[in-house]
Image (tube, rainbow, N blue to C red; front, side, top):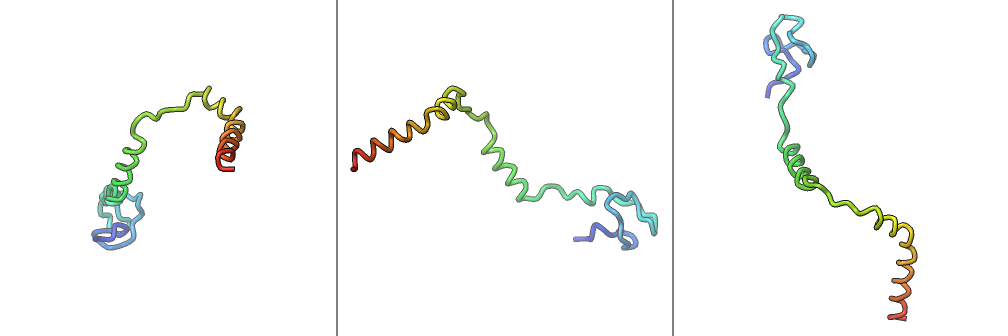
Length: 87
């Protein structure tokens, strides 16, 4: 694979933003820096689309408020019930 940071004509270092070589004046192809997405990037994008693709179901705000207000009482009731069965 050729070194994309070098001029293809004279071999001098060329900035990624340069349109041409400062030494020999050769035109530099601007697409030399864009090699496209790798296979790993494409696979990650595909997996991300699978997991986050559709609309997510949200918890109703009243259920969330009820759990926040009475969650401790519910946990205590369940623990008391379980300890009564096995205690």
